Length: 322
Figure 1 (cartoon, rainbow, N blue to C red):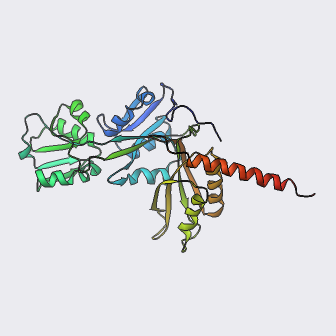
Figure 2 (figure 1 turned 30 degrees about the vertical axis):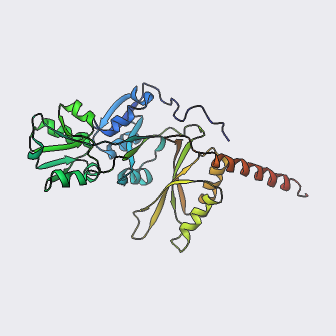
Figure 3 (figure 1 turned 90 degrees about the vertical axis):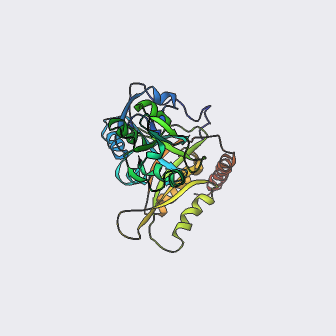
């Protein structure tokens, strides 16, 4: 097993590289990547949609992509999951988690009571339902490509009757006013972002996460239990389990799984090896430094126990007569 490094987010990237992110300027995505010093020094390329970011990364137009993958309130960003699982041969190299605070932005001098339309990214609109129902009952909502795109559109076509849900940074970027701040329904809201690239797997840090997609050999009773037992037997903790349609027909589902540990950990490698041999397929989406505080030592203790048991088996096999 690789010795844990001092930092869960080592400097990985050459400052000459290009990073495409879900833009335009002023998105939560930009805000999240700016919390990472080595990402912030790259040549940043805002792109219009999540599919644009992943396509540009796959083609080599940019070296890395930075996109949202999960929200604490609204759940997974399904377009990100599906494109990584089915359409692009990319690996997750890091995750970044930030708190999400939404604001109602207006053109300077606009009256809150006069707002008749609110524009934003669908996830953001969903996260502010209570505020809109209480303070702007009957308001029309319109979807935009991103929260910052909603702010940009309002700045380009100023209308005192339109508001945009966006980060505070978007107000600075586009010269708008914050009519109401921190209006999300759940103040503990957070969004998880990932760095994706083509070049490989970051070394283990001792506080890592691995993402995979498991395709069932057959949709039979107990098939999911059989998958989960592989993790239970090795004391590997799952941080995410989600089913997604495989696009092959009704009722045909795969499982997207995030687990604690790194492919370089013996227990994780052994688990993935068994899954690959027993299921229809396993797609590896990456092992990468996990965000947040370091977890407890349960996984490392289990890994040490597995090594001890492996040595025991090897010793017994060494006693087999020719």
